[in-house]
Image (cartoon, rainbow, N blue to C red):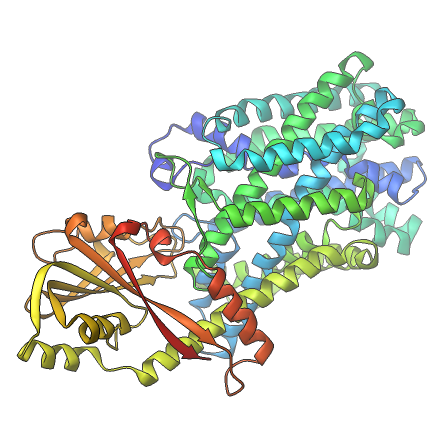
Length: 626
């Protein structure tokens, strides 16, 4: 689906722009399907000129301030070596805080709260988008209403089942389809505006003020529906690493933003002329003969938007794993050329079950709208805090300027969040519940691994003195290379001790291998490996990866200056599998220890994760009390 880092530097600007069109803007580009329908129909807002112009003004200035200014204008300048996204932003923000400080822990909580909220959003976006598109059927033929739910479920099931094949082939269609989608949005909106040009007055922010004065408290609650127009804004920043800042900015300002504004204003013009169109202003904006082609195009656009969210969930999961906050999962690469195209079966099936349950539980897009927004607006606020911390360092801003800018955007973000908070009893609880579970699993895994490492070090034998004494009078050395995987370079790997105890031999070449993860997206090849010789043909090797790098241990070893190179047929990998025993003590609460142990048991084999041939691996067990 997305271009790899290497490709972004070589692809021409038009190709990158078209790719960005198909990947980055799917979520925000399908918002016109349901935004005004929910604002007016969901809140039973009177279709007066003051209300329509006020809502259009709110939508317009939300697109300008939140998307154009904050995300496209400001946040894209806070990249982490070209990469965007909340975790890339988190690693930059943490550099402002001392190691092990309270501030660093607070930032970590904020960052992973935002990542957890993303998973809640990942469930709702496909459900509400596809349902909104298919609901157009009952606009032309109300008798088709019973078929909407089965058809939406069929589209979603098909989408999840094709994930294993990757998006390399269908991804080529994403850009042209979204190009047509935004073109049609703009054209239909223009036709609506021509019939009632007075809606253009909504660009004046005073109409938004008049709306608030006329509706009081109700106007604040309606912000919870207005925010639907800007869901997907965070994707512009998150996908920056795939396409670069310039293509995304160019496509947004030159094509996507005008198309969205025209369509929203066109729907507003329709509502001024025909209040009955409130039942579905998006589809009723189109001529009757264009209705069914529009349903087909809208369904294709929502599938693309859903695909972008699903792929984003795969990408965030991979980052979380490599940052040490989740167990290793089976990550499959679906393209030989594009490193960003991955498929994680566990995440795919969890998302599928969640989305299907959402569709069956909420039944229609209007009900789902009550659950949508709380996760997005929470992420908006977290992004604001993190980005201004980063920009204070990058732009050398004064503290007063940093706090002023942060406060200005936080006022907008928190207003949207508070308006959505009232929807928690009606469905907003769902993404919050998902985010809470995800966050709990992340911090439990991280804490559990810290406890395990402490236990290993407490019972371990220091590596360097041990190897020095071992090589003074070595056991029989046999042909071949032995690679002992370890999470701790300080102590001797348990697998090495077991091999010496039971087999009483030492291979002619021994490598103590540790895989490390840096807080940068990509580690340069020159910094990939740190090799230290411990004795004759014995090496300690640390291989470093960034949180977006592809991990391939055999490929890294092929470039290791440890003798004469690695022949996989003559290399054996030894790995010590930990059998975790929860015990009451100074670790975590006993229930969290059981959760951690369950996560560890469900983790993919490290050999699969590190791409080590299964027939070259020997696993040895060890018990650890946590």
